[in-house]
Image 1 (tube, helix red, strand yellow):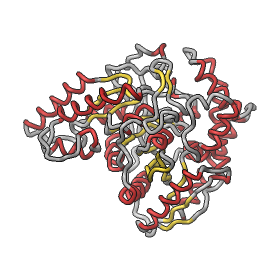
Image 2: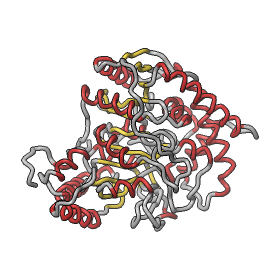
Image 3: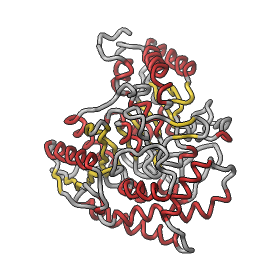
Length: 470
């Protein structure tokens, strides 16, 4: 390593690494090698990266260094490693979804945003674990087993993007790519103490060549894929690369990345206990800390709620419930027993749908979008919990009683998903030995506002990872 910096390469952020490579203080090959050594050191104890692309990554790094040495202009993330969740296509590796039946399911091409990251110079270094078929709030797959929370081995690392979150938290990767249909980017970010961006529906195109290629309408309206990182600047850089319309995703849009400036101070709605259903002291403390930091940064804080949080969360479950029951017979393969236990519990919590449930949920969603849109005219940003409790013990998500409590705790995150809004998960400290991570929610296509507020929080409160597994 030619850099005189005392910081080890695996501790650096993606944008810091890009600058280090561009200025030739370290080569891409050195960066990849540093992360491979870190993976070898810590991955056996947490099981976050399940397929390692060591030789492919080193070959790409040498090509990146050759291009830089030849005087070529290099793109934004030139030579920087990244990891990808195993339900997102990376050509040359299987999209297993954590299932044995898909262990050899090789896609014919990259997912659109993975291809864009490659075009921006980033190098895939590994595939990360997830809950089987992306279903559960705990990362345990039929194919790879469980991922461990690096902060507390007795707690879940979250899911379904728990592999990327744990890998980021321990310095095995500076950038990850995950997905979110019921909190699956932000919830593992909370459990593992990292940052994540859930983009607006349609902002980042998603597509696969592995069956089932198309999803039920509920998933189409709630599922997004986005970046995970340790620093907000990395989320911003990744979004710049990943965003934009693609013919492969009919719901993707060419919306600008930055909207008009808003009058200052920007007003923020602080939601400490969504819908008054309870929140853990550790979570409330993190939100109060974040509110004080934003106020110090020039934001105006008002403690109030957007309309009908409970109804928005119920609408998400109604959409999923109607779709899942109607389409379950079309699945080309069966799911593992624990996945089915969780899914059955979730559907029981949602209740028995009637013939109108699906249609009415879509009508309710449109009404709620208008109501939240009006609310955000005055309070563009909402500061709220992701999960209103601390991470649960693995296995405590397989009964109706447990899932009932988890839906209650996840109500704010689920409401955001129902409406397709952008949100950034940002660490704000440590409480009771566990990360405190909150979400900043914005209006549709205003990720820029969320990221600016998250940057202000990071500047005042700092990052809390990487860490060594505990």
